[in-house]
Image (cartoon, rainbow, N blue to C red; front, side):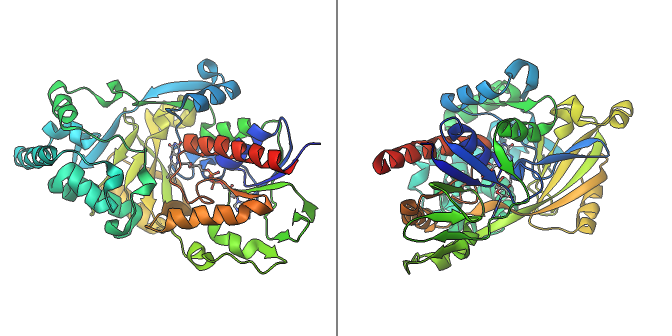
Length: 429
Ligand SMILES: Cc1cc2nc3c(=O)[nH]c(=O)nc-3n(C[C@H](O)[C@H](O)[C@H](O)COP(=O)(O)OP(=O)(O)OC[C@H]3O[C@@H](n4cnc5c(N)ncnc54)[C@H](O)[C@@H]3O)c2cc1C
C-alpha cells in the first residue's frame, strides 16, 4: 500500500520532496498562499519580470542534485548559462568581487595594510572556519581587520542586523570558499575577471525566472493552494491535518509557528518550545526598477550611508525579463534589495543615490527571508526533529530547519529526508 504523505508548503523544498516521493507514494502538497513558489515566486509588473524576493539563479556543486535537476529541465533549450559579473560599489567606484581578489583596485595605502594583515594571518596558518567561535572573529582572522572594517562588517551588519559576534559559524559550514594567501596574490597579479573563475557561472530559465522552476517541479503533483495548515492533531493512533490521516507530514513552513500548530493528546511537550518561538529572522524589501543598460549581474553595496545592500540585475539574466518598452529604449531592469522592512518612501529616496538612473516599477516587503542562527540553534532544531520523528512529522527547508539554504541545498536536504522516510517505512512495515 502507498504511504500517504502531506507536504506543507510549495516552495522549492516542498516541491522538491513532493516530486522525489511522488512516484512511489500518495503525495499531497498544501500551500497557504494563492500561488506556488514561496521565496522564489516571480510575477510581472509593467511586463517586467519581478523576483519579489531576491533574483534567484541556480547552480550546484552536487552531482546528484544536478543530475536530478536536469531530468526535469532541458539545459540547452530552457536555460541560459550565464557568467557571474558581480561588483562592489565603494566610494563611487565599481570594485571587483570577491574583494580580496581585486585589491589592486583599492587605494595603495589600503592595499598595503590589507596585505600586511593577510601575510600575518598566513604566518599563524589558516584555521578551519568551524574552529572559530563566532562569525565576527572568523571574518577578522580570515580577511584581516582592514577588509573587515571596510567591507565585511558593514555589509554583514546590513544583512544580519545583529551583533556578528553572537552569530554562530554553523550557518556557513561548507557554504563559502576559504581564500588562501597564494590564491589572493595570484588573483591580484593575473587579474582575471570574475566570470573566468571556477564556479562563477549559473543557470537561469530563459523565460519566467525562478517561477518557471517552481511550476515545473509542481508538474504532475497534487497541489492545493489557499490551504493554510492551522492544526496538526496527534492522538495515539494517527496524525491528522485538514481532518485526514497521513503516514508522514513534511513541514516546510516557519518552525516558530509549529509548537502552536501541534495538538497532542499526550502531554509530552517539547522542552525547547520557547526557544523555537524566539528564533530571529530578517525580512527583505525590494524595489523593481528600470535602469541604464549594463553588463552586471550583482552589485554589492557595503557602505553604511546606503540602506540598500545589493542590486540584482535580473534584466541581464534573460532578455525575456525586460518589457518591449525597456528593450526599445535601451534600458534594462534590476531589483534593489534592502534587509528588513522598509517603507516605499524610504526606498524611493535611496534610488536617487544609487548608480544606474533607477526608475521604480513595483515594490515588495517580505517579512522573513534571512534566518539568524545563534550558538544553540542547531542543537535545538536537531532535538525538535528527534521529538517530531515518532509522529511521522519531518522538518524540511529554510524556515523549518532554520538553515541558510540556497535552492540546491534545499534540494539536497530533500534527498536526505527521502532516505530517512524510507528508513522509517522499513521499520514500520
Ligand atoms: C534575498 C534572497 C535571495 C536568494 N537568492 C538565491 C539564489 O540566487 N539562488 C538560490 O539557489 N537560492 C537563493 N535564495 C535561497 C532560496 O530562496 C531558498 O533556498 C528557497 O527558496 C527556500 O525554499 P523553502 O521551500 O525552504 O522555503 P519557502 O520558499 O519559504 O517555502 C515555504 C512555503 O510554505 C508555505 N507555508 C508556510 N506556512 C504554511 C502553512 N501553515 N500552511 C501551508 N503553507 C505554508 C509558504 O507560503 C511558502 O510557500 C535566496 C534567498 C533570499 C532570501
